[in-house]
Length: 84
Image (cartoon, rainbow, N blue to C red; front, top):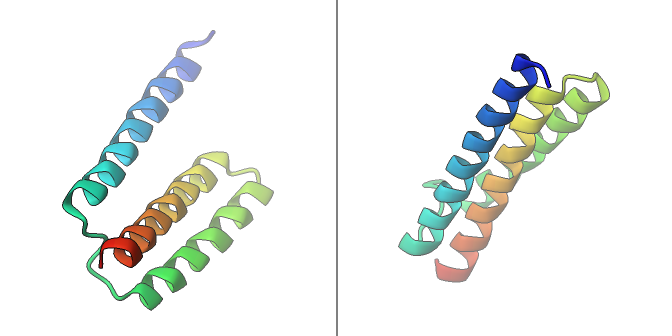
């Protein structure tokens, strides 16, 4: 395994842990992002389109980043809907 792939793997793992921590914190505090739900849904759809576009263009890192933003927005919408 090359050093570059190891670095990408470690950074990806750290990013995933941070993302899960943010989602866990949202659930613990029972508060999503500080935007109305409709704005969060619009942002999520926009991030989804950009993510798919990046995956089709084989820009996998950017596609993954925007996909994680979709996951974060979806978690925020769920937390806001359930606890808000």
